[in-house]
Amino acid sequence: MSLSSEAAGSAKPNATMIKFGYPDSLIREYRHWVVQLRPQQATLGALVLVCKDRAAAFSDISAAAFAELPQAIGDIEAGLTAFRPYQKINYLMLMMVDPDVHFHVIPRYAEAQTFEGTTYPDKGWPALPDLAAGVQPAAVAQAALVAGLKSVWPALRG
Image (cartoon, rainbow, N blue to C red; front, side):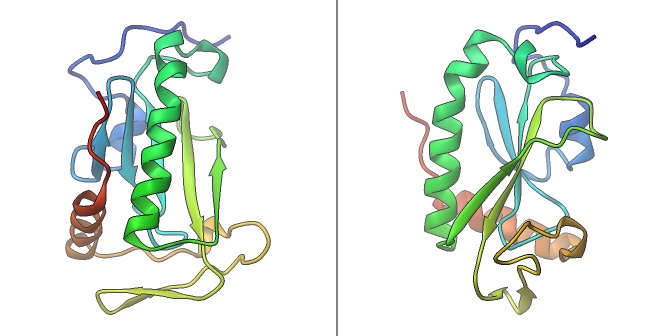
């Protein structure tokens, strides 16, 4: 049985946010969602979109979180396109290890991408993404990726 939804915006980040490096990996925080850099870069710009509601099943997130999801997705796609245009994008809701509702967001590239001297191949292209084959950038490189993504992220819409 899944946990019931709870109002978003509590001061305490959930376990999945922490697992993915919150607050250092934070790209953008919304009322009900956070977008974070995925520490292991399956491809350049790989992210996680984590719901802040206390919900272990997608059907248990609040109506307000569902309503805000299109804004977060629109910003992800605009932000990633501005950062490094991708050919495809995959949203994977795996939820086998991390307990809170979240998506792995994997931009897909036909060619390897380079950022600040590091090459990020898409080893699964053109099929399924190979999440285990990604690059684990050092802390300095992760911080540069976060800063680079933030610098092109769309402004919050009113």
